[in-house]
Length: 178
Image 1 (cartoon, rainbow, N blue to C red):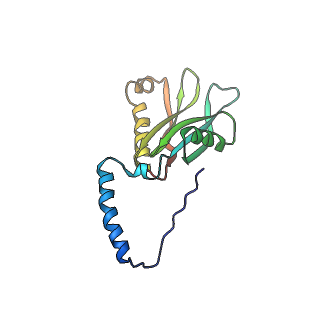
Image 2: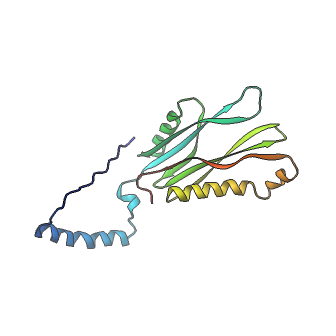
């Protein structure tokens, strides 16, 4: 994982005449870069992340439930982020449910009972956005749309029941997101 640190300068600095003239040249150049489409996401390079969920089948039942979450952020490639998220689960059979690339992602879980399995079935949905709040809102929206028509028909006729409403399981953002 790439380490990141932020250093704040609490002292007052005075710019020399040479520093001021250099700044006068940098500001217009930065404006040209921004106008040409080079944004802040590329300023720090491409960063990737992933959320992996461990699902365990409960013996004697047809359903699975999550027993762990592994997250990884700020990796130089998606493959490296995926591998780190799976390893962060610390158990076998983790599955990557969400991936990020210079943005944020959230995983939402809801649990329903279904007649065909006569058991609880977790459902995992993801959302992405420029900020953590946007990713969570997108994932929760997906969860709520899952409970809308045509799926809601199963709930209306008693073939399924919502046990727990959609809730955020985890959210990640790369350090250069939004």
